[in-house]
Amino acid sequence: MSAPLLELERTDETPRAGQISVVPLLRRLHFYAGVLIGPFLVVAAVTGMLYAFAPQIDDVLYDDKLWVEPAGTARPVSDQVAAAQAALPEGTVTAVQLFDDPEATTRVVFAAPGLAEEYSKTVYVDPYTAEVKGELTTWAGATPAVTWLDQFHRDLQLGAVGNLYSELAASWLWVLAVVGLVLWLQRRRTAQRRVRAVLLPEKGAKGVRGSRSWHASLGVWALVGALFLSATGLTWSNYAGENFSAVLTALNAKAPALDTALPGSAPAATSEHAQHDGSAGTSGPVDARTFDTVLAAGRGAGLDGPLELTPATAPGTAWSVAQTDQLWPVRQDKAAVDPATGTVTARADFADRPFLAQLSTLGVLAHMGLLFGLANQIALLLLAATILTLIFFGYRMWWQRRPTRADRTAPFGTAPRRGGWQQLPLWFVIPAPLVLIALGIAMPLLGISLVAFLVLDGIIGFVKSRKEVSARTVA
Image (cartoon, rainbow, N blue to C red):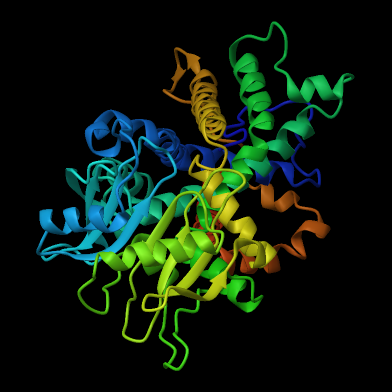
């Protein structure tokens, strides 16, 4: 998630005062960004690592509800839905989730009184006996434990204010990664064995030199993963995510919604979110027998694997059957079904989505650890562990560079020299304002915090220089 965070040591490769170079400014920016964003990245890495193993957590906590022993032939879906309705008579069925794993329970999702709009009640039914195994309050299909982990990863359970933490971390992550790589390559440019010097830590190096070597080499290995997590994480953020969605809309690259309007009726607005989690209200009481009709139509249309059946959300609209297979290769085709006749009235296939929409879906699934199953989870675990190790070595370097003389002690090392902006080459200065504006528009939190750092650093440097001038004048 993070490339080299903290660079403190002045070396022979470090440009000296008066020399034209971008390195001094990048070094100082990298240092302060690492110090301030590091704690956020620790939280994001730990919570993301836990969330990646959500399926295993569910198995431990909710085994009695999620799984059963196969026993013959499964009962009709209508029988299972009827059993769930009897167990939760005050609720209204909004979706039924079926799985191709013979040991999985059927999940009947309800809108129920007293729940927040985004939450549902899910009743778990044994598909072989139609016995209700239990019920849970769920969010977008997630169990309470996974819901808590998801929200903690996103906003530390602090709501809108907490969302700023994750967006800030994701916004700076790619900057730390790229700037860290530039600094390390600049340091190693004179090495005779360039590839090994960049990719592997220096043999026998100790102290701050050894910490920096391990930190930088691990950062290079984690670079691609850091850029991936940053990009996919930003798609979920409040401000940058809205801009990303706007770009997809402008490019006509969003996944088209399934047309659920029945022939001869007025078009009804549909929502991808409502179709996914079953949280939308239905047009009236649901006849459990209709699920058999809709399922047969969906299977006849070639929709196999795990499915979600969603009743009509308004009068004059069709039911929907959606594939929910998130493993590679994904199966996420959808069909609209007329519940009265059992005919398919429309389709929305994954293969027909614009390329960017497909790429966005795959990226999000990989970010969640779902796309490649256990291999995906292990990759995220290793990446998170690498991030935490990088941050450890970064702070360790900060501590190792502290002054230790009796007349000059400090708990931490000093920051890289201020005033790097005075050494910037013209080719960097001219486009820099345009780049800052573009970044500020695309990623507002990054833009605001970056400008704040540059302005504050400049003000502090100006005040300090004025004091030094005044002190020399007095002397």
